[in-house]
Length: 130
Image (cartoon, rainbow, N blue to C red; front, side, top):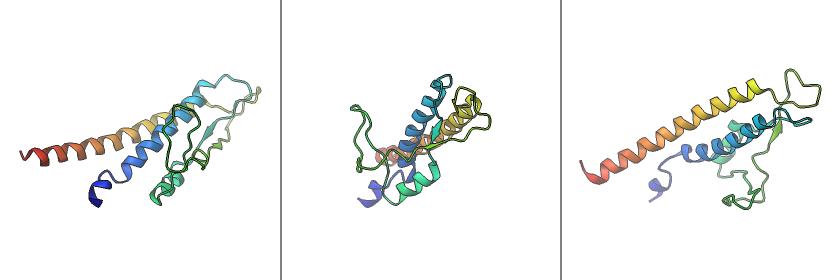
C-alpha cells in the first residue's frame, strides 16, 4: 500500500505548487498598470525541497481554498522581485518577464501532468490485463 500512496512521486506536489505559482504570476500580470504594485514570486526549487521533506508551506487565504496539512505556515514565502527597470509610478511588474515565467511554469506543469497521465494509463492497462 505504501507504493500506491507514492504513485505519482514528486509530480503530485509539483502540480500543486505550479498551480499556486500560476496564480501569483497571473496576479502580477493583471496588476501591471497598478501604481505602486510590487511584483511577487516564490522560489519554486526551495519550496519543492520543503515539500519533499513533507512540509508544504501553503495556507488558505480565501474561504474557497482547500485546506492543507499546515495552514499555520505562510503561503509559499512570497518574495518581491527586483525589477530591471522600475517604473516611475512605483510599479515593479515587467510584463515580458512575468509572461516568460508564466510560460515556463505552464510548460513544467504540462510535463508533470503528462507524467501523471502516463502513470494512470499504465495502471489502467495493468488493471484491465490487456
